[in-house]
Amino acid sequence: MTLKAILALTQVAILAAGMALLGTLVVESFERTLRADADQLLSARADALEATVLGMLQTGAGDPASFDPNSPGFDAFSEPRLFFEIWDGEGRAIAASPGLPAGGLPWTDQTRAAAESGRPLTESVSVNGRRARVVTRPIVEHGRVTAVVRIGESLQAIDQAVNDLLRPLTVGSVLVLLVCIVATWLVVSRALDPLEEIAATAQRIAATGDVGLSVRPEGTAEVRRLATSFDHMIGRLRRLLDSQRQLLADTSHELRNPLTVIRTDLDLLGLDLDAETRQEVAAEAQEEAERMSRLVADLLFLSREEEAAVGDAEPVRLDRLAEEVVERLMALAPEHEVRAEDAGPVVVLGNEDRLRQLVTNLVENGIRYTPPGGHITVRACRPDERTARLEVADDGIGIPSEHLPRVFDRFYRVDPARSRATGGTGLGLSIVKHIVEVHGGSVWAESEPGVGSRFVVTLPAAPPDVRKGAVGEE
Image 1 (cartoon, rainbow, N blue to C red):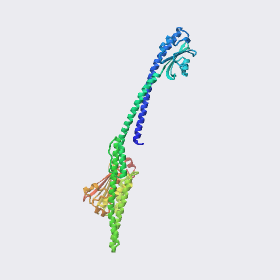
Image 2: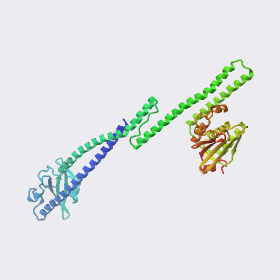
Image 3: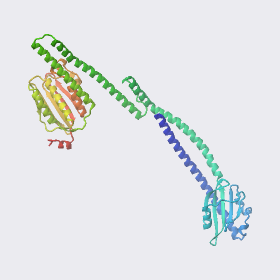
Image 4: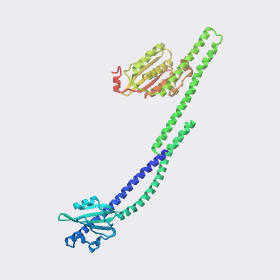
């Protein structure tokens, strides 16, 4: 069953139940009101009948057994819907209105109890197969019941009135329900049509792979929000596919050069070369193989990082991490002056291995583009209570301003020839940007050609209680 049918049937079922409940309450209230009015009128007639019988007894009109129901005293109670009977104190029927069945009005346990105790009683009974209301009035003289007066009225008129109300109420309810069914179906269809469009678009995308499709944000606020989210998702998927295609093209291009060099060197090694030339050719092939290995390693690292989150974050002393990276790279780049400035403890929450990779890539980038004898300075500080900052500055060749917005793109190089000569893969700064973004921070570059570059990373600082618990935190 479709969602449209489920919603429509649910709405109709709720409406039908509500109308049935309301109709029942209306009918019961109407019947209760009519019955109350009838009981009030019947009670007044019972008072009159009781007074008539009591007057006859008190004036000595005769023994109750001699009462004639056709006598003028009972003319007021000879209406077609009214019937009465009189019983003596011994429980014998002594008078009854014409039309009553042979056994008279039925006696219930409540009737007998009322007659014996002298209490009046109003109840519903069945007379000639029809419902009736009967009032029982025992006449008590000198502490004993001398007669029992019972007067009743058929409820046929009330039943007819209720039926007269039920017929138009039922017909009206059915008509209203039919109108509501049609209206509900139209409203639900109008509300869910955009969802069907979204589903159809998703099916077309799955069948054709065309991520250029989109849906119109129409319908209710929730449907519009869903359509907008769907479009954003498709847009992100489109950008991801474009990025993957670009990455594949860039990777193919980057691998083509070292493979070409290696293939050429292998062809040369097959020739009759002198020992010195052979050694130079082998060294060049080895260098290109190592660069290709670094490229593949960076690609693997970046692909794994894009699939992973930070995971369990832990307090990391960013200042100490920077000192460790500088100490390690100083031995690998003795021709450069690499140093870390102490600006006090800086604690962040994150993954220590990834943050170490971040610092390493920035420092190696500074070393790679700084001539021998140049300086690379690393400084971790906390400019305010909520922010941790890492700066890596060098006095190298610098970056022209038009290239700064793209230095963090994959395989982007300001000077491709120089980058390959330094052994760079073109992925180091892309990895830096990804690690920073995963940790909720930002990164940017400031540079001036011939003067140097400065890369700035900002990360959320650890809360005060975490900082206090970190090793070495004051």
